[in-house]
Amino acid sequence: MSQLLEVTMSPQPPNVTLMSDTDIIRSCHSSRYPRLSDPICSNKVIQISPDIVVKFGRFVKRGKFLNQRVAFQRLDSSIVRVPKPHRFFQHEAIGYLVMEFAQGDVPSVQEALAIAPQLGRILSHLHEMHGEVPGSLGGDPVQGVMWPDSDLVFKDQESLEKWLNIRLRRPGHSISFEDQGLVMCHLDFVPRNMVVYDSTVTLLDWSSAGYFPRIFDYIACSFSPFDVGFFHYLQPHLQRLTEKEEKTSRNVLRALENSQIYYFKY
Image 1 (cartoon, helix red, strand yellow):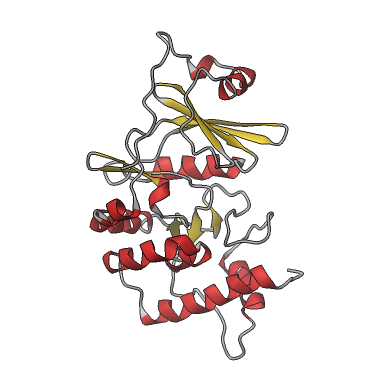
Image 2: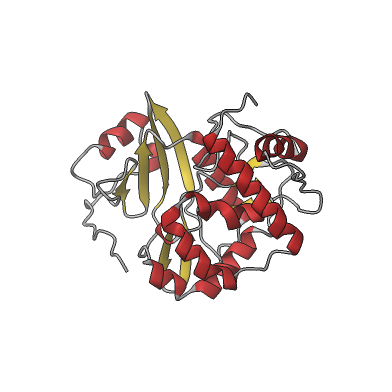
């Protein structure tokens, strides 16, 4: 596994509850604290105490904090851990998310597939969490590569179906989720967003997460070519989709792909 940086902290690490926004910003740009993120990543992660990290960057939005808070509150930590989000604020164009440090290692694809049955149980656990309204877990506009619009909010399941059907452009076909409930979907369930310690998996990066039919978690990898292979080998360990879900997933994928190619007024 790729090792996280080994940290030597000061004798008296800062108390994040007492730190001002300005203090946190200064800490993020200080060479005193270790950087855990890859240098090429646009968003950075800094560890400012033994149990606290700050993720910051132009693509760190309030919705990520809200989504992670819902996941932390709803999911069973004996099945999957979610870092506790402590605080979010924005300074100019940069968002800052203060959260619990996740101890462990980021697995390679091969290492993640070695625990594929456990990952299947984790995704099934997410899909046991039901929602009433489609969209992000915290209620902010949806985020992620699946969605071309930055301010997209669905008021109900019918509005989600309408949005997709406008973009389907496939004569004789339509999308309906009549028999499919809205469940918690991560929408970026890949090894780089996991940390493994002993037999515990911590799931990171909840920015794309939302309440959707579970098929959305099965098609999300199609928008990240590097992840298709991982999900292909993980799929035998996931709950099988019904024939109707398979058909609906193909139409949803077509609609989402069209939304990336064509311009639609709504």
